[in-house]
Length: 172
Image 1 (spheres, helix red, strand yellow):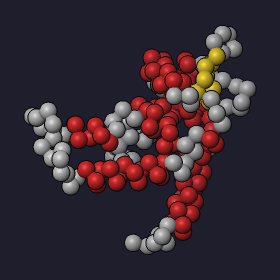
Image 2 (cartoon, one colour):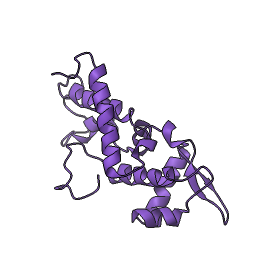
Image 3 (tube, rainbow, N blue to C red):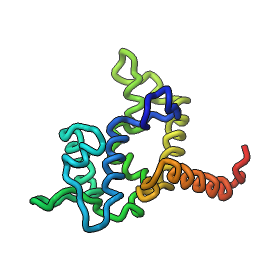
Image 4 (cartoon, one colour):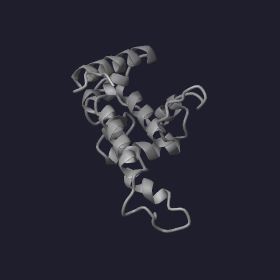
């Protein structure tokens, strides 16, 4: 996510909309239940334009992840506790590129992929999408609040637990 592609290479592409949307939510996750942040404050804290922050928060509001209050004491806050918001839900809301559209992206000069009826690549793409979604469903927004080191430690604990619970016991 943060940093240049050379500094942070994961092999998984995260769109700017997904990253900035998550970052806006993390800003709100830092707040107590009685606090809120204005659109301009969220934009300032994340170094993005007010227009971009507004678009993201509109999407998140429409999906029921954030709520807004008008007025001098108004602003944005999470619609539910951060511990109840899973990253899989957030990414699904912010992801403009669904798996189904993957095949539509690689049609060459044709309107429809020549492999639509029988494709050996589609199951791989769908399987990878499922793996990523399953991993994201294990992480809550609350787990992203903290230092990079503490979040990394939490994610490693989740990975260790998953490998112990998997049928193969984590071995290949």
